[in-house]
Length: 402
Ligand SMILES: Cc1ncc(COP(=O)(O)O)c(C=O)c1O
Image 1 (cartoon, rainbow, N blue to C red):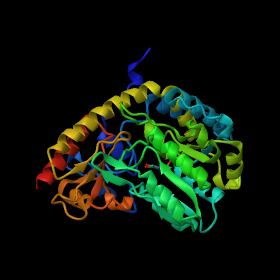
Image 2 (cartoon, rainbow, N blue to C red):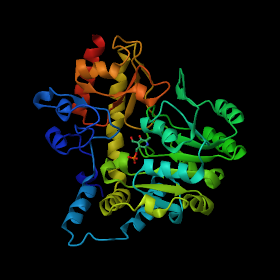
Image 3 (cartoon, rainbow, N blue to C red):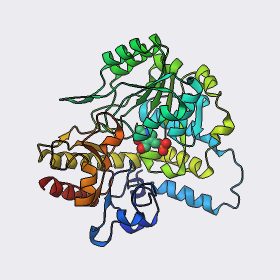
Image 4 (spheres, rainbow, N blue to C red):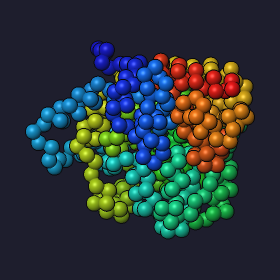
């Protein structure tokens, strides 16, 4: 039976958020001083809608688990992380009809650690790693920091939205025989695109022909809107021998600060290959992260359903407002709580995120940081309460009207 506590609450306590010292809500030593990002009384301050983290979690059951942990008389060494893989496998089956083998799941501190470790394990210096911009900004550091060669398979914008041209991937592979790793972001950040089954099948065929390892970042997999379906790459039997998928409770349940994710391997051989990275370099996930991930995956289904319902309404609202501005380019995301807005034809200038921060006190993620195709764009996070979203959209509209 469902209980109120199993549903998301459409409310953001701004004061509590400001006190929580999260990156999104104000503590960012690399960028602006914290006071700049403070949303003050009467919402006079800057509203943060930049980091890809929603404001609506974590679910009560996860918070209870963390409270129980704080009350334990002993938080010494533990093997609790061994339960993370099986909990994820059950979640994957219930949520996505995908049955990963719990024995082929390795907890990692986060998705990025898993990706970097896969690049270290499955490629060597100078090997080609294929990226698909516009994409999550830290991916652009991948090849520089690992001395790999960056190959670009860009997303293309069509009238229907952002798409991958698989023929372009085929040509890229023909001309770059040293390609070794294909990094997929599925669902895609920042565009919120889902990969269709047919596209994934073709990608796997090409990976077979060119002996690629596919590293599939599926961190946004649970946040899919009605009418489309996310296909976990490893649910395709043909992908098993060459795929690692990185999954996490971070985006779904807003627990990224607890640092727990999983690397899921398609075969014993792939897992064996990953073991090249010494376990001590990876470390183990924390007790708090393990508890949060396990409880979220074991109990979070209903809460997630209600979150998706709320986010679906928010997506509709963004669409309604943006459709009033013909200069704004927008394709509603199929997944994620991110709206990728092309503001290059508006009067907001070459760096619209900067203009919006100054003029509208709205902090969005600057598109140019996502690489090729991101210029003139901003990424707006609509994963917040209805009240805050209305204020975000009001400020955006006012700035667009000039
Ligand atoms: C596509 C994608 N991958 C990875 C990450 C980072 O995940 P983690 O904190 O688990 O490394 C993010 C965070 O925004 C993301 O959007």
